[in-house]
Image (cartoon, rainbow, N blue to C red; front, side, top):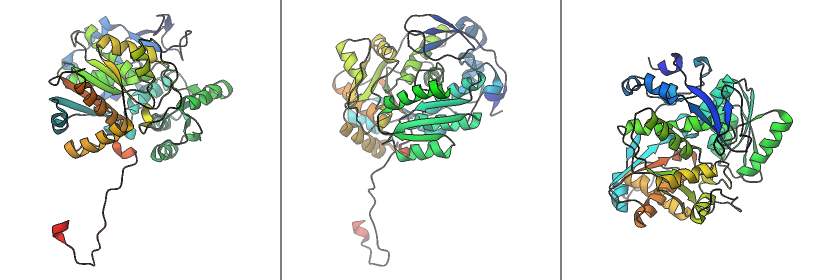
Length: 412
């Protein structure tokens, strides 16, 4: 059955939540925001129980969507699953791009195939499903575009009221998409953290549940399915390097958590990829903190970049991003807008994949890592294309032709 993962009851193994900074324990099955220390909460599982229950063979027999990982996900009641068809996204080889840059093994995980055409669907489907399970009826979020679109879609499925705030220069397709799916959307003359301040105040005054990045615990659990999925797709051998476009960093944090959980249930060994947090030169708080050896990343002033999804001046999970990067032997890298635009243009012509600007940033960072010897030229690297390139403005390079005039076919 194609929807077996959505309809079959499966055992659940959540034991508790804990503060990602202090380790303070929080009760499961209750509504939580940040910890008492103001840091993200992480969901913890009885991994020995998962190990005794879930096998690779059982997993392989299930439909290929993110809900196949139910034993490692937080939703208890099958009836609370909210889904728009979150099927596994492909790993696409980029052989011509790799050869042009002097690499050998380059893959892209194309997250633009998900509902609402971005990887934000992974995090928001889990967060909305858990919000439904915990009785939430009104949600609010700041967004640079794609997360708001995903929240609007899943809130519509769940019958929730959604209020979304975005910077005034958010791509028009995102703003229209959010509104089309029934959410109230407001353009704000500021950046995403300015929008977040409005959400925080509205949560106090109107009772909205704050869906800001990492201010609720379950987006990480949805995003970690990227790591679970790619491990299985690569035959339980992780790549040598992962390049991830990093704004709030939920996916990078989630993947690092996924790898730990997969090792503890016996699906993979201890080897880890080098994790590269990729940012734009116009908004690079993680890069600055990484290079300075700092644990936390101060706000980046006057943030600007064509890659709006990674234009996040401050991230509440900054220390978790930096911890994963350092533990893996990776790095935080900043790339220019010119390099991002060139990467988007070149990979489309070389290998036919239309990257979003944030995906272009990962390719630009891969090129830099090769040139600086941060990864070997024979190592297998994985890029994340986090959304369909069709959601962003594209340069019009078409030409016109008058069908009534003589046509010089030799010149075409």
